[in-house]
Image 1 (cartoon, one colour):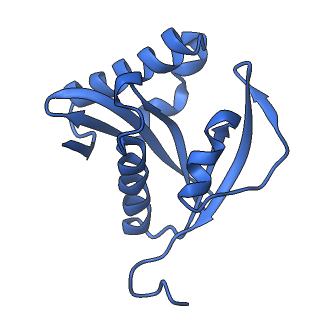
Image 2 (cartoon, helix red, strand yellow; image 1 turned 45 degrees about the vertical axis):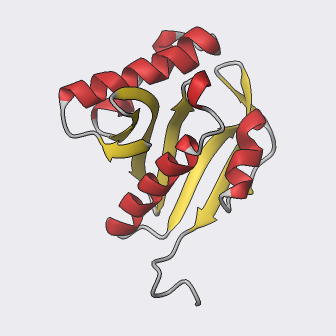
Length: 149
């Protein structure tokens, strides 16, 4: 059973960075100098564990009126298990808790279908980031009490 937690200590942060390194740097060949950036110190990080093994990660920043979703990744062996969806749910819940009602992310083009299934819509043309095609996507989120508005 996968559990997603907001990162609250250094070990959890190290675990999140481990997953990011495995997926982005080792697997996708993103230069480490681009993968770790100045926002890592202030972002809210999330870690997904399968039992005690780190299998997924993501981060959240608040930019203008948006919760900005970044660095969503899942270790290859844990893909197609719902882990990514659980990470996104935790991030959206945190955004709602902090008073944000709109989400934005830059999705790798190959992952856009995953985000579309979660209610995100493409809001840009394709662009390159770290040598990988991306699109901007957005979604409005609501609490259960105002979802019918």
